[in-house]
Amino acid sequence: MKPTEINIHQNTEILASDEAGTALDQPDDMARIAELAYYKAESRGFEPGHELEDWLEAEQELMPSSG
Image 1 (cartoon, rainbow, N blue to C red):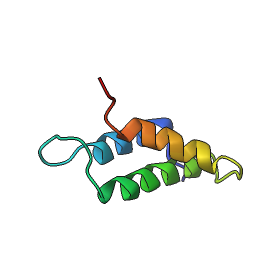
Image 2: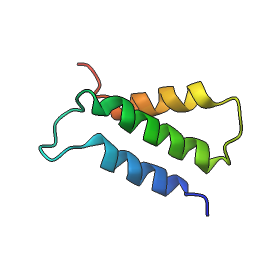
Image 3: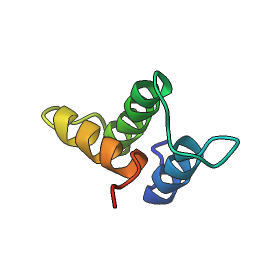
């Protein structure tokens, strides 16, 4: 079964927070980004050619915004 859009957002919330509710920290950042990018690829059936897009979207969703 493919995850729905709602599952991707639930996974983002889980991956984006830690026990203290603080910003992500290394080396976990890469693993969390990779995991969310995987969920994004899985949700569209692993259609090739979107790997960078998936990574950048996951990175933007998980990294704290500046300002």
